[in-house]
Image 1 (tube, rainbow, N blue to C red):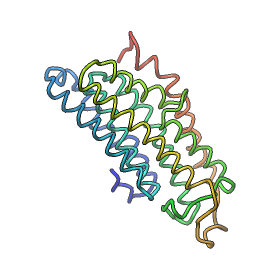
Image 2: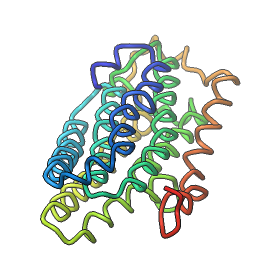
Image 3: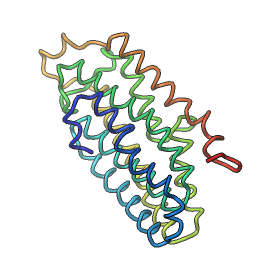
Image 4: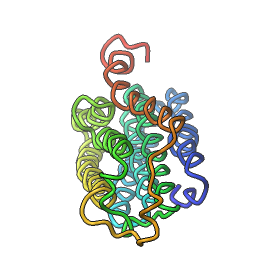
Length: 251
């Protein structure tokens, strides 16, 4: 996944938010009856999912390419989705998959707007102080980052936190393993999300001087797409929680 960022940013948004993530997870969810028949395989799925979440999140802490940070974030969230399946909570897994599509596409396209604004520069070490130049992109990026971290009332809060809760409530070794790695991963997610925000938008700008006169906001068409994704990141969890989680859900 991190190597897929070499493509154009809209392609990255589509691949990371939908295609790559959906294929494997959807196959596991649709084949849940087969997985339930072999408990040892569920243990393996839980182990791999939790390890993936942790390793990808710690890798994201040290990246300087803005798109690579978001790419490792995708790997990390995929780990959450997978270990929820391993713990036999397929509806919760699908719920996070649903919410993740909104805020991850939003983050990738926001990163693309930021990259386009500074002459296609992707190195976070050459950003900084853009909050006064790109206020709309800043607000959109904050919404996506907060949804990713699981900030209360945003979409990630209703699915990622439920995954962590069902892990500890499973009352098994695999559940405890997933819970502790998932909790550490949540901390790492918050850390690298705030790091990207700080390096891109706060402090003194570190951009080369020729970049600054050309810094500009996104076009209205792109802004409208970002707004739609931002609304999904804000409200998909609120309106989808009763559909995907709880007693009586069709899932």
